[in-house]
Length: 411
Image 1 (tube, rainbow, N blue to C red):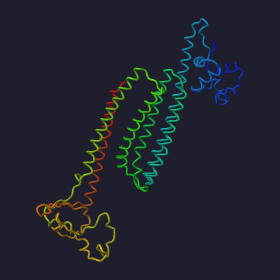
Image 2 (cartoon, helix red, strand yellow):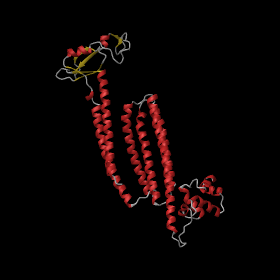
Image 3 (cartoon, rainbow, N blue to C red):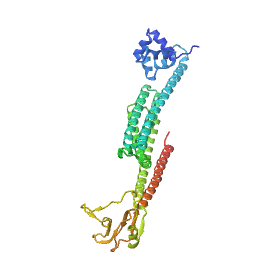
Image 4 (cartoon, one colour):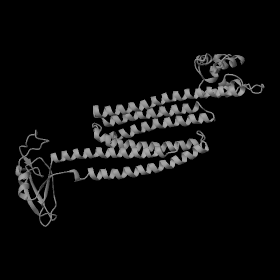
C-alpha cells in the first residue's frame, strides 16, 4: 500500500490545480526550494501555514495533515483510521514545533547569561561596575526581546482551537516564563553595580548580599507580571482552560498569594534583625579604661598609624586660622561634660586610636572605651561573617516557602 504523506498530497494538489512550485511559494510567502523540500518529504510546512495551504486547495486541515482526502461518505470504515493518522501527524508537528521553541529559548537565555558574564568581568577585572551593569543590561534586554519574538512565533504556528494546540501554548508560555525569570534574576543581581562610583568595583561579599536581594525582588516582580499576562491571555481567548484547569489555577493563585505574603514577612523580619545586629556597635569591641591614669598612658604613648605608617611626619602644624602651632597643641584633646566643662585634657600621640567613647555621669567620664584600627578591622570581619549567615537564612526561607508551594499546589 502506498504511504500517504503531506508532501506527496501537496504535490498532487498543486499539479491538479495547474500550479507551479514557484506560484505556490509566492502565495505562501516562502521560496520555491522550500515547497520542493515539502513535496520530497525533506521537510514539512510550518503549522501556521497548514490552514493557508488547505484554503488554497479547497481541502480541510485534517485532510492535509492526513495526506489524502476524507473517505467518509464513500461507505467505508476507513475514515476513523485516517483521522487517527492525521492526528498523529499533527502531534508530530507539535512536537517538532516545541523542540524548535526549546532550542530558541535556550539561545535567548544564553544571551542573558552572556550579559551576566560581561557584567562580572567588567566589575572584577576592570573595576568598572557601572559600565558592567549597563553592558549586562543591553544583553538582558536583547535576551528578553528574543524570547518574546520566539514565543510569538510559537503561538502563531498553532493558530487553531483544538485542545492540543492550547496545551502547546501553555507549555510554551511556561518555558518562556522560566527564561524571563532567569533574565530578571540576572538583572536584579547586577543592579547594585549601578549605584557605585563609575571607576570602582563592587566587592564579592557586597555583590552576593545586595545582588541576592535585588535578584529576589526582580523575581517577585517578574512573577507578578507573568501572572497578569496569563490572566490577560485567558481573557482574550489566546489561552483556553477547561473548568477543572480553571479551578486548579484559582487554587494555585491563592496559594501563591499566601506563600508570597509569608515569604515577604519572613524576609522583612530577617532583614530587620540583620540590620540591627550588623549595623550596630554590638560587634565592635574596644579597650575599656576604669581610671584616667591608664587611659592617659594608652593615648599619650607614641604609636604610628598602621594605615599611614609610611607617611612622613609634618614639619609644622597649623591651627584653624592657618597660624603655626606646636605638635602638642595640634594633638591636644579634651573630654567635656554636657555643659562644656573640661573634665580631662590629654595629648593624643597614639595614632592607632580610631574612636573614643564615654558617657559623663556625676562629673566623671569613666569608664572610657577606646577603639583602634584593629578593633574596626575585626568588627568588619565579624560583620561580613554575620552577613553570610543571614544570607544563608534568606536562601533557606525562600527555599522552604518554595518547597511548601510545590508540595501543596494543585496539579
